[in-house]
Image (cartoon, rainbow, N blue to C red; front, top):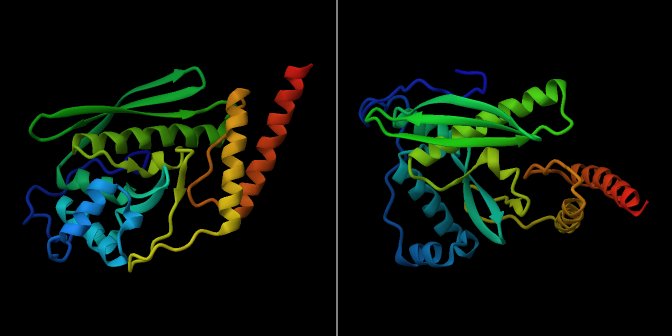
Amino acid sequence: MDSTGERDAPLATTPTAHATELPHPSPLAALDASTVEQVVVGGDLARLTPEQRVSYYQAVCASLNLNPLTRPFEYIRLNDKLTLYAKREATDQLRQLHRISVEIVAREQQGDLYVVTARATTPDGRRDESTGAVSVNGLAGTNLANAWLKAETKAKRRVTLSICGLGWLDESEADTVRVARYARVSEAGEVQPDDPQRVKLMRRWHALCKEADSLAVPYDTLPLDATVDQIVDAGKALRRRVDEARGTRAA
């Protein structure tokens, strides 16, 4: 276990050897043609029935040999489409299953960004590298230390998915995608309706972010599961900084 909490040591070599460490998902019937068509052509899991969503989720886990009981994936709304993103449980299990070793090969300060490069290596000699970058503008003390750790975590998880040939958005990246919204989906595959107040506040937040970007005003992205109170507080704080920036420019 390293400083980021990620596991480096492989525990398994073959499906038989790791069966006691990582249970296989239950056997599933093949996805029906309509489900495959909806996913491949539409790319929007919201268009599936609840039963199809459950079947698709479990089939994805089975294809990667991941344990669905650990919820290795969660749902996210990205560009108005419902899709999955990989959680820590997914990358931890993938590294264990494929005996992937990860090391940090570079840490750099590039302007306001702290950039970490991670290298992944498989037993057959394949290598891959990915970076994780976070803004450290104005940070100090514990907040700065947490940002450094987040950059390392992001780099290690991204390279794990990359060397496995998976294009999933990682949990450590999802919070930084401004157009992403956390989606609530029950274990039965039913998409829970969004809170109208929260949706309205998020629209205002995104509009405010555009203003901030135009004025080069820095701000932190909201977590996917931000509460209404968190959105309101963050919005008020950013509005003050945006108004101050406008006032400075006008002067």
